[in-house]
Length: 568
Image 1 (tube, rainbow, N blue to C red):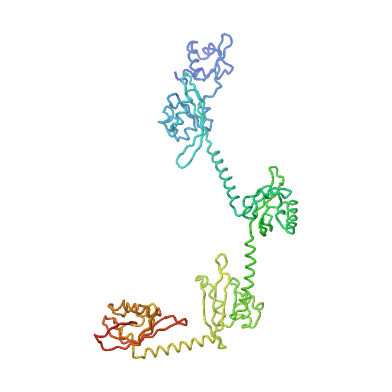
Image 2: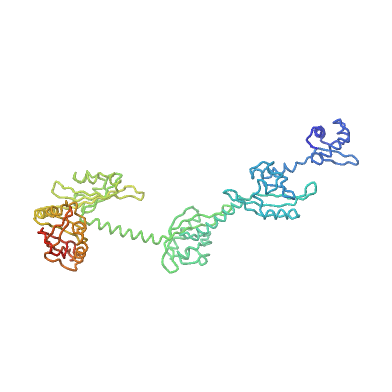
């Protein structure tokens, strides 16, 4: 009989109106039903747990039950709670189980666990523990569960259970311990990371108490100072310092202990076990206990010995370079791009402009230089920034002097254009010599082009460096089409090419001298062979190395019996 039927409602209503309890006779009179029927209904309500009964002598008094149904109690729990019968069929599942499975309670209850939305828990270990619980053993385990892309951990309990009909069952309680396990893992990883950092970091970590005694020394002490942590524990920093250095450290620590300050910075010079000095850059942080009392300092020491030495070397080099720049014959200027003013000049610049570097400092290009120089040194910063390249220019001054000028961009550590380095050199004599050389070269080129014979210059690697006008006429090429090409691949007949190239290689290596005259044909652009009588001469550098061969050739009547034994 369903306890929620209309027949039971009047009884429950009557009991609710009489919280002190009612007998069977009282209930029968209140609802207008005979005593036997009321007794039968009360038995149903007792079994379902909706009413309770107390006996006073022979009288039975009934009350509304003050107990909460177990299903309601289970839903208050954040743990996953399942109740299984002896066939591993689910008979109860709380709201946490439904939420975890993403299913309704009706889809879970009544199914065997392996056939339900909780089939993922059908594991041989769990089946074994269910069997143990059915046999009366209470078991607890930890369970690792993978769901999609996350890892979950549960503490799972298997509790023997007996149902109202006396049949055995199992209550399974799964406590989600994922967050705790993750926190433990994170703590272990953090501790391992901390140990790894302390042991492998390049810095030396020290803890000192209020007496300036070491209470912790990191393993880096072996590498930096040559001492093991055990050799340093219980001692003070001053025990590893020269007396004059130790006194200064005592004063520093006295001030720090009197008034603890975070991020105290200072420098120590300690003595390595080998006796050599070690310069340390030291950062101190106060340490406090759980109740906030000052207990000492944690000191981080960085070995800056090499850096200090490097700074000294840099200072020496800066002094050396300053001396060099200040005494070179070329004029040197440095302009700050942001303010467009000059901040440095050497002695040559002072002599050229007739003022000291102090007088030049802070002035603009137009205030210092002739117009021909001022425009070059003052403009073009944007172009320099885009190209990051050196700019060069020549300027002829009204005095007749010629200057060769150069601008070099200097960038800061962030890649921004910071300074412009300017160099100016008086090249009046050199410019005159170059003009004379150009004139002589043009005159020589005119002589070569006016010659009635073919003249070619072939470099040591066999490429054509120059062919005069007559040579171009014979070969049928423009000079631009020949320069840079292989002489043998371009103008030597194919059947002679390898042998003549080998002969030329021996000449270029300096292993032989060319004959005074020799006959060898050339191939013109249209494929015809034209016999040439050659006179060859080797060109050598100052070390005697062959750098090219100059060949002059005169076209001759074709002689089929002549032998072409040497080439150019």
